[in-house]
Image (tube, rainbow, N blue to C red; front, side, top):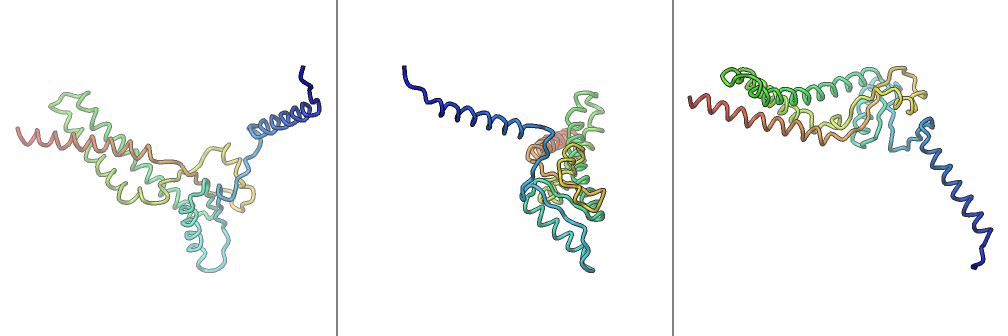
Length: 203
């Protein structure tokens, strides 16, 4: 039999127990998240002169370009404007997808003699929204962010340090898949519209 180093076994056991306790502590859902400096940026509502609004906008632009995970906007005016701008982008995306889907599936649900009265306008609307999204929105830094409304996630941010009770919180999200989705649907709608217009003109 090989000799057993009881001291080493005991030390290893204590190390494993300590690591297990550390892992359980990190996985505890009630434990608040400790955000690093690259996770969250707060645009504080501090007025230091007549150009305060310009300073707020500059801070927000810098935070968007720095790609922080969370951006907390304390000034009400710029926060509301940013939230509305993100809503516009979401509306363009959803309209592109829904109108394009209507364009593609209407011929399957209605008689061919009447379906183009709905499918063609829907296709044109989808293409228009997709084009507008591509020109005015997809290169804007805000396209990578959504307004965070989840109360649980908001509770894990350092909002208690703010003077405003209604800050706008932005969370960075990957929009690659939704861009692919609405570009694919809009392209399919374009193909259908061109084909249908050609058929109507050939009659």
